[in-house]
Length: 506
Image (cartoon, rainbow, N blue to C red; front, side, top):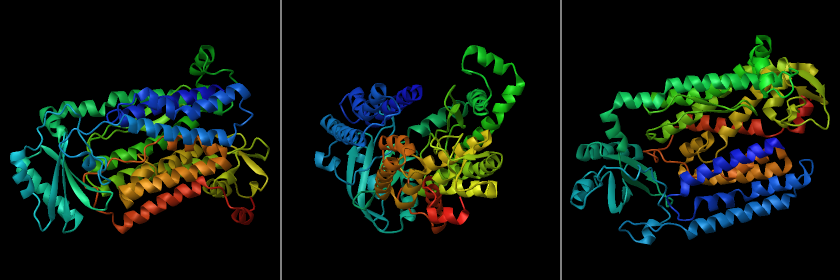
């Protein structure tokens, strides 16, 4: 029960921050009210558990109807408080279907926008043989140029970008997006980062990377994951997080060593995942922080790691490479860790307690990839009536699979959402994300282990921030690699078909 209260607290905090970041500037409806509406299904679930206990599952209809009603009510409240645009265009223009999210600088920017007398200069930046401008819209923090594309998207972006820089210097970032009507348009937004980098480049870089903070979080996470590893290794210490037990563990190197295999395996996977993002971001000269771990003294010992990118992504190619680098790097480390851990795990009989998320009696057939790797590592020891008591290293490897699958989900700002955005464009990516959320929700009705994932994805925005050149498509090689990434997601998430299970004799 304590886990569910902790989960509610974390989910509530994440939802509140998401709502505050995403919609607080575009609606007058109080953030706390929008948050409360979104949290209604989770609150109902917790209330049901308080009344009837965790052993009696809530009716599916209760959850589904509360979810549907909360989403509809959230949309009504959001639209009711939606702010009226303050630019010189009509309301119909600002709410046109093709007006997609635009990367915009903070409101307090001191960079002056385009002035009316400069419109001739602006129009001269768009040769009619490259992009014929038909309409210019002036927004408070952006200038939108709509027209007809007359050449290849990549050539048009590079030529017009050069023209803008020649006329206006580094005053603006040039964004090239595809509207919902299929027609690409250009957006000019003030470039606040250029001024900051010019004034204090060295100091700004030091504040961005913060190696001391990264090392401190790394050390703290090593401690918390080691202590969790001690619990996973079944060291007989009651209530390990009490002061007395903690002092006993920290003063006994032998006990700590038993928790290190899990800690090092999990941190290697998570760290390599984020390092993949970081290195490719540096390759594209994108300002980004070092990987930061998130230590927590319970659950898995960590909530993962993350990096932050502080400059816009130049094109869909860079977006794809940065996004897929993390799952690939993490998966490359996950495979040997998981195979070694499975080879040193114990085979136990299948029981009623055998579940996907039970490391003491895990049914490998709940995942196609897990079943194949288990058969590879254990051979004839694994039969149709076998479950696995995972070695701590295998637990770390299994969590690596879970992290890889969750990140590859093609929704919003997850790595998978970035990947499908880069492959198919923003419009199609939104549709794919919605389909993925529905499919996962349906799967959770059959496999309750996926209910937590389904809830998280339902609260995650589908819209992803565009790259500067968000129109030029990828090459065939990257498209194939992206499809392989989605195939990896499928073989991790879906259960082993019975025909393959019979062939493998498991």
